[in-house]
Length: 349
View 1 (cartoon, one colour):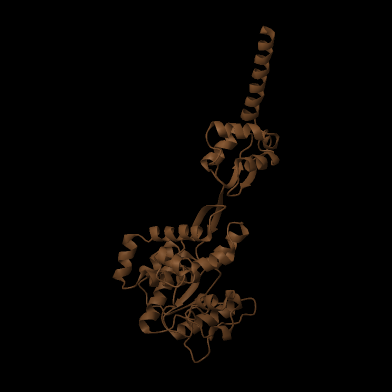
View 2 (tube, helix red, strand yellow):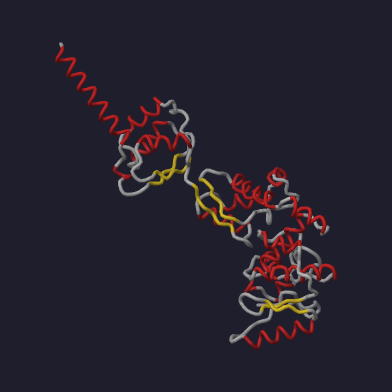
């Protein structure tokens, strides 16, 4: 009898040892590298254990389930995309799913980018369908929820690097980036906009055009001044990026007929600001839109890949265009509106 008890004790100890080894050691798949695994919503603990075992992330389904049962988390393991680190034990893997420490996906939304461009980046990353993002950006309920008094969230997306997790909806993703814009539009900026007698919507609209026109940041206040001067004089802004936004073409491919397109965003044929922003402006462009340079320029033309040449009169502007043409070593087609229109503020190629 004593011998039987000893044997049972030895067997139990061995089983406990094997179980502890399975819980505390790492699985073969994690020996040399980390593994990314996706845990879909509504999966049972058994289904999760099967998936982890199949991916060689845990040694034993039974050990994973037993440990989860003991810890009282069988019914509360969280869905999501996880990056299981190299040499993580079963206990470590379970802790990841208990805490919901899902894998972040960095997404860069640069200054001057549009919502359509953000949508494409999100789709390439497998985080959301581009069509869902674009549709959400014009959804009246989404706009109302986030305090956007405009037909689109264009321009209300703060340019930055974000960390999104798989499983977020398009509304959750856009909601986060829009809220970042609300935070960045500080009370001081809002008060300065009121002092300029422009609304936040008008500020973001002008800033987005400045953002797309300027290459060198130190030119943004000068470009802003040109647009402010034109607005005061009742002149059309004639900003190529607004036409690009209207017709959906790269700037280099805009033609004379594009500049005459009848469209609310075509600032060659319409006086004043377009109906809304054309891209996401950064803080420097917003500051430039509020505080333009104290100059009386009305025109600018491309001088190099980074710089523009500014002019006060049409005569100076035409001279600048001629000199730019002469400096080019390749054929150059001047993009200007029809002769019945005044020369554009942005006459560069």
